[in-house]
Length: 504
Length: 122
Image (cartoon, rainbow over all chains, first blue to last red; front, side, top):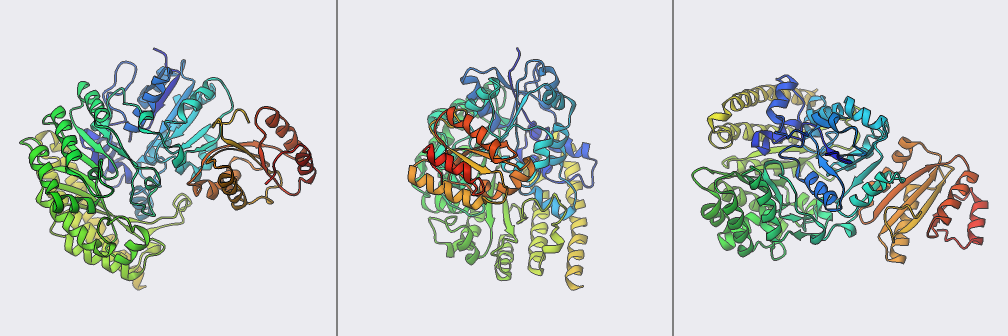
């Protein structure tokens, strides 16, 4: 079958990361300690594809756009980047998506600013755009449309936008505009260069299609948007919508039927599914977990994101976290649940300035206690959080950083990964003007050191007992243990050099 | 302008043939005023400009990236002079709805023409 519209992305995205979603983050770093090929094997093995090069699993956002186009009657399909050449004859529109095209997002920019080396995801995407099939497609007049959560990064890579012949950049939720755009491209009508989809054009629940083929590691969206209004996050600008359970189950069914037996429930805050404002409600959450886990049996299960305030509230008011874990999630074959959470700061003052809604329904004055209580609840229930901290925000004071450092001491006992992220002005990395060592203060060094020691300490246990405990993962476990050892050793030297620079 | 992405949205043409006269913040301010006045949050924006691709987006990047409440479809048409701009505008105006113009003062003759043609100038 010839496809008029082909959707693709680079290898770091078109992969299932060995079925371990968290390994996807390895692509956000530069290839240090190991050759880039080994690095890519760890983070982005080639996916299973059919004879046309259509991957069994593909990034969820691309599946949504594919479904929207197919429902509108277009001949559209997601194609693995290694198979683009097979579709050059029929292809009229080539669409790209990415979570982090140019490594300006966190934590890519963090690793880039520490090492001064381009992260793997950026290298990989540039290789795709310079590859012979993509260049041939442009030469024969194929229209290029790019989108996805990192679309904004094109505004900081104008030369590449022009050089690669990208016709349109779409920034924002795509469901309402993509059909019109592709129609115009196929009719050879003029395309806008940039489309920003504002909140008023966010699609309604009816306009969001059900995916037609499996998503990477069974990820399914249960909500869109976020009500918390943090200043550093764009998702919060979009209206909050909970996807109806029948649609969620239909997508889980698509995955399971095609052999993807795990589920990642995706939301900015899973526990707010059909919540009462920011207060989790037991009934919809239990119904959701029961129905989804009945479909996947003993398959893997994770939440993409949850807020620490919702974890505390759900457990303390309804014993809900332990009920969900003990009654539905934990089984003989499933011994933990992974989730990303945001600490961001240990300072009440900074929390009030940048994320006043993050602690709700509790007051911001309670933020450090909320964080510790939520970490304790997760530890006791075999939930393993990957947490982020933000350092170097323009409004940050030394006292704010000291408060974060004190909070890290309180979290030492709880099984978790904590990643510090430095606020980096956009565009500065590309010009080689911004390096961590030039912007770091003594208090930052202490926080960097504590997070490093915390994370490398717990990483060993998480890898050995939980995340990579299967004998099948022995080679991966071995390489990653070596990598953790290497990072630990080199990081000590890095911290010392930062301290030396501060003294001199 | 009938070829704008958002049917039913306002069409705004920004004349930028002189490069310096219309600042991004003025355009954003004009858009916001129009949005409030017309109760419309979607715009097809056409810039008639002397700037090339890179300079154009460097110049207007702040406006685009901070424009969080609007839905924008931005198209750029390169022109060398007010006369070129007028030619393009002629096509745009006859092609569909009458656009709103955010204009450079240096194209005074054009502005006069727009007033006579009852085209709204912000």
